[in-house]
Image 1 (tube, rainbow, N blue to C red):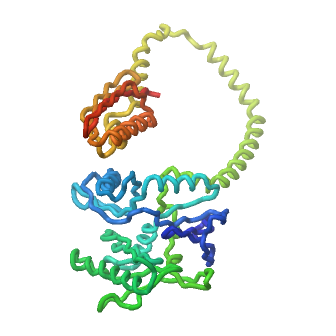
Image 2 (cartoon, rainbow, N blue to C red; image 1 turned 90 degrees about the vertical axis):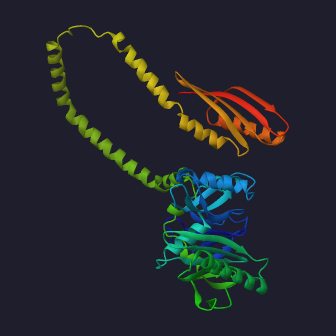
Image 3 (cartoon, rainbow, N blue to C red; image 1 turned 180 degrees about the vertical axis):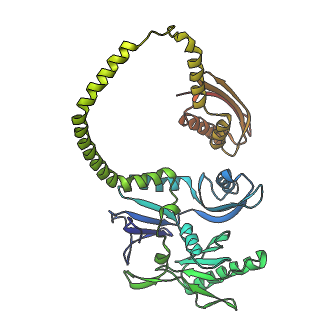
Length: 430
């Protein structure tokens, strides 16, 4: 189904299953996977939703991360995985995303890098959105993925995402499951009343632990429809599920991995073929080299004759070349090369925006570009208690050093409710 990916690992609600062919079984810690695989996950402690952000479309993910921290939904930095985004007005952007705590996302990347097999990591909502776009509807469609005591709701068309939310029941008792589906259908009805968004179809994706609605209709008029199912064999016998049917055929374009990890995946994938092609090329070049050497003896004699004739006809130059004539030009070129390697003012501002925490306010920035280096002095204020302020100050220093800057001078002064700092640092051209 997935080309070179022989197996699929599905991670939901803290539980994992491994799918191979039509076999589905729980994945335990004692089991090892020796094949290439697709990894579908809902990312524990993540948040998936739509949001409208007033910012440049290039920086909208950064603003989402900051907003989640400011509202208290995240108490640590977040990695924002974008499923869809589009400029809604000149100054605002609509975005559909999954936000994951940065430390959890880094752990996933570490597992992928350390594994000897090919792994493609795809967020759950990317799978749902891809399934929705495969439907033959021009208007909005509601896709519901039911698993355990959870229901993931996505309302979107092929061109715009309107709403996304995970709805949770307390347990899997029949009473709670009925309440769960009432909440789901209530959310859909609320969208129609408040935003005039009326789905053309309601599609339900099932899994081996799904609890489907008892009624075949939503409200009084609109029925819900199950996605196309396929039969899988589990520990409890055969089951008809639709999640396997909607998994993407070409997975890498939907993955949540950074560009570096995608390039590493392709490098691992094509390395054996490149090696074989290189061996063939070496053999061809070796054979060509032998033929060339056999034919080059006569040509070498002709070349020697031509060289002697040129030497005989060569005349002296009218004046010798003075190396000093080019000294200023060479010096200028060295200065241009050094300046090109130094970070621009825009790059400095972007670097500092990434380094400074939300409580920190930068009051001044001075950048002095000299030959082969730039010296920077920043002065700022942290509106926080001493412990937190000093921790933020240390994080700024660590981030600057990791980014290749050398700290020349630093100062940290604290008051009752705020602290002030000054850092002078530089960066030399390579």
